[in-house]
Every structure is written in structure tokens, then in C-alpha cells.
Amino acid sequence: MSDSIVRCVRWSALGAAVAALSACSSVDGASNRLVSMVTPYKIDIVQGNFVSREQVDALKNGMSRGQVKNILGTPLLTDVFHADRWDYVFTFKRQGVESQARKVTVYFKDDVLARVEADPLPTEAEFVASLDSGRHSGTVPVLEMSPDSLKAAAKPAPVASSPAKPVATPPASYPPLESPAL
Image (cartoon, rainbow, N blue to C red; front, side, top):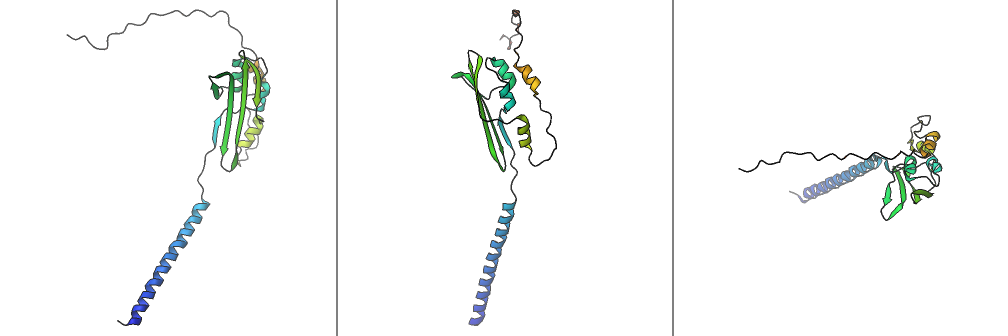
């Protein structure tokens, strides 16, 4: 073979290799652009107890623990070392929106409400409106806890007269688990 034919074959092979490699990078670049346009769906993460401004406004000093629990619900955090303190913590994370975090702390003295410390809280209507993620549903739904029911929850529970003593029942007699060995 002549030297020029070998040289032509070599240049052709080199050109084909360069074309193949450049095609790979353009396909790789296109796939990267496609992947960057498609983002995975991330669910909303709601943790803790949502406490509204109306609920905190319904609390009054001197309320019992049961009355506070009727209004705010079960506390998220109770500390055995600080038994006179209940913490209600709420976090809400949504894709594309800044995370929300709120804290309400309730302090008791001699099992009655002494004081409440709370971050700035939204009303129930404001919170429901903030949940709307682009859907236009029109009106805000009827809220579960009306002002009348909040007032009713704040009233002291009637005290029952002396409770009846439970009657002890004798333990049941069960047959042995294993038969006696003969």
C-alpha cells in the first residue's frame, strides 16, 4: 500500500473518532438539560401541632391542664424535668416556599395556667389560605373550632361526686399449660 493511502485511512479513522466523541458530548449535554428541566415531586412535610391565634386568645390564666388540653390539644413535648411546661411546636415545609416554624409554650403553676409564650401566630383562616398551592377553591372551608366551641372548651368541667370504689374480681383459674409428667 502506498503511504498516502495509509495516511488517508489514519486521518479518516481519527475524524470518525472525533465525530463519535463529539456526538457523545452533545447527547450528554442534551440529556443533562432534559434532566435539569424535570424535577421530582416533593411532598409537603407537616410536623407538630398547629396552634392558631384564636386558640391562644381563648387561654386564660387560672385554667386547669385539662382545659388547656381541650383548647390546644396534646402537647408535642412534655419534659419530665420541667413538668410545669408544655411545648407545642409546628413546622411546615413545602417545595418552593420558605419553611414555617412556630412554637407555643404554656407554663403552669400548681396545675393551673400561669403564662403563655408564643411566636406570632396566624388565624385559622390565614393558615388555610396559606395551604392553597395554586388551586383556586374559592371560599375558605368552615373551620372545626368555632369561637363558641372555644368558649365551651374553656369552661370548667363539672366535678363528679365521690367516685364508686371498683370491685375487685378474683383472678381466673386457668388449666396448666403442660400436662403433668407421668
